[in-house]
Image 1: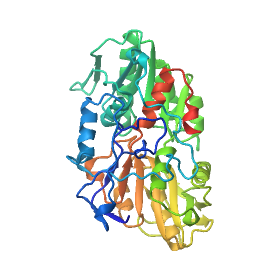
Image 2: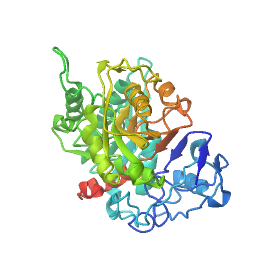
Image 3: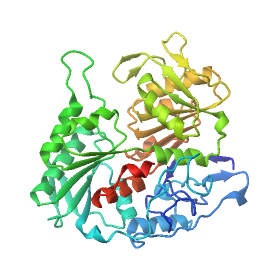
Image 4: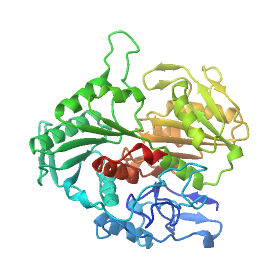
Length: 435
């Protein structure tokens, strides 16, 4: 079903769920439902499929009501169309992956009365989607800033003896959002919460995880110490920049991955496994790309070898590949669909220069996939310049309206984080989600 999109795609409501544990009976649980939106143009109008929703969590919740209206073609999500989600082989698997097969979505857990979810101001929409998936209301909290910039936090309900989860990515402005998280943790600790879990979909300062030159700080360790000393008992993070960052915390860390969400979406595109090649945009991301390729029908791997001139600077021009720059391709991409995989896109210099190299080496199409869309200038200019067939990201960081562009697709990780929160609260296995 060939489709052309006139605006960015916002994929996944975070509220929809099937009545059974497995995905695939009513579309993928990971990224939403088919909406017959006028913004979608299809060569065959009869090919658009309406998937039924079976709400298993608080259908009266305001966000669920909005999502239900979307499913009934009354509105589009956030003013944008929701991408069609198609199941590949009837069981929700991703070319052999068993992502999310064992989720039990039928009834809210009985011990939810001792669980509280609060949101900071960094990504309230994601927190609302998580709460909707879990059948809970977001906790009431008052957050304001004084004239001098100081942050004030007051919980508007009791958390005594409760397991509290605070959803707050430390995305730009990183320092403001980090300080807000610390004050929220302190407020919960002083309100006698039983446990406090900092849910950090995007962990800022994660790239400052080691010393590369003399007299540098290791800010990732400093931030880990701040969160611990503020009173957090546990951290739930998504796709940390490097695995060693977990060791910087002196408290338990549950590390989840956005891979299943992106893999399920790629599987819906029905690309032949023989045409795929997974590309790491730099040598440091080879392990991540190799794991991604293994789950994507064990696709072949290619590597872009680059030379970085400085922080947020990658050699080569913004839009086209410069043969004089020091970039080499390890692997064969000629005539193939190249899927570039990274944990984040900041200024997009690395991934844009890599895409230009892939086109020069004969790649038929190039897709960019990442979990965290930092999108510092001039990222939008580079990503929308025609190098990419599609740029696939998740909503761990909110994307500003002015940063939407036609090739952009946003997937929701709300169900992933919501299920992880349930399992942490129930003292169940988290790693089994990804088996």
